[in-house]
Length: 219
Image (cartoon, rainbow, N blue to C red):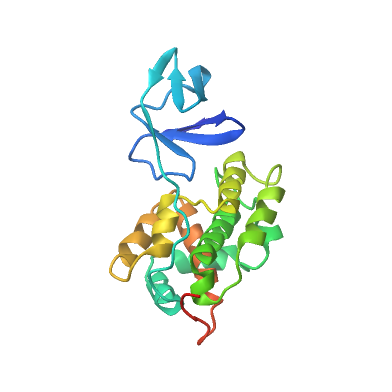
């Protein structure tokens, strides 16, 4: 499967995204100098072969949950300043209905899936510090339900989330310190036509679920 400047390939039953360094990474990315034609593409054992020639490829480490850099109130104030986010949150509606959101919308990662992935990521980073539920059971449920309900890419994103792995731009937004937060949110907002904003809507949903006085700090 190929779209624009990204090619997707299966290796050992896992999806890989092959792209250049200018593309925001997936949690299963390999960076290559040029994106090979999909009909000549073979991937396996850490090697990428296109047209019979071996290509240099570099794996991008996925983001893993670390403590959030700010509290929920600060995150929400920063999100309020992201252009276009309020409109996307209104368009997506109730963020507490995974069955409605799973696979909702067009694209490589439908809007509903982007929202759910943002919500999972923020909760994975912050559940011990903000007092929100551990998202691991929901991540596992969505990873199980996703095949056949959404795109192959979104299903792979859920599978990665169930293993505690997220796209680097998402992890950077969840973990950014106060001084870095505006840039991290802007970077994520710029991903895709609406994917970044929809993911930020999920991050906002997690932050909005934190009641005043419910942020206990590290356990």
